[in-house]
Amino acid sequence: MRARIWLAVPAVLLAAGCAEEAPTVAVPADPRPPVAVAAASSGGACRLLDFAVIAEHTGGEFDVAAATERGDTHTCVVRAAGAVLPELTLSVTETSIDAATFTLDVQPSGATKITKLGKAGYRRTLPKTAKAGPVAEVGWLATEGRLATLRWTAPTGAAKAEADKTAGKLVTLAKVIDTRQL
Image 1 (tube, one colour):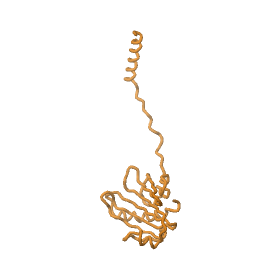
Image 2: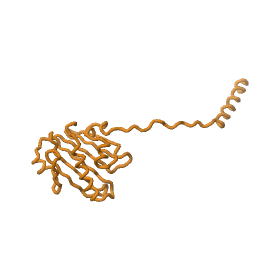
Image 3: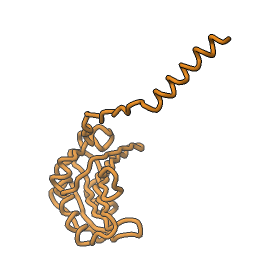
Image 4: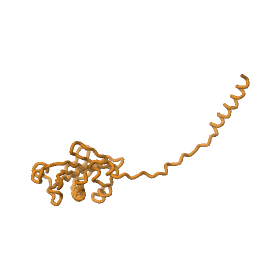
């Protein structure tokens, strides 16, 4: 028994001494830089979008994308990491309507007609709400039987004139989106 006590005392003293004098070990930072992920990797309608192309046509810098599909409708929402707004939403739905039906039933009243965008198209701006700034929207009937809508929701505090300008930029973006790839 006495031998066990003599062995235990030095072990306790050594452990106590080590705990007090142990040098701190610095853990190196993760040397790997964050990997840029393409919007298309989210699937759905995001396959039709590219962050660089969006930035080129709208000036908006986005780096996060999410997609969903419901029936014949494919949707993609892109945002900047850590920010709720602005956001850009693309929705594409298969349809059998013609240009006349699009103009009568889909194009909102008061929207501006757009030429050279699919079979028929429009653009409009909506006023700000309590939770978001004004909205710029472009809708068109693509030549392959798809109804597409691009919608830019601005941050709170943005002016309606800014949304009007963004609607024009969305038209140029819409012209490079190939809905046949969906």
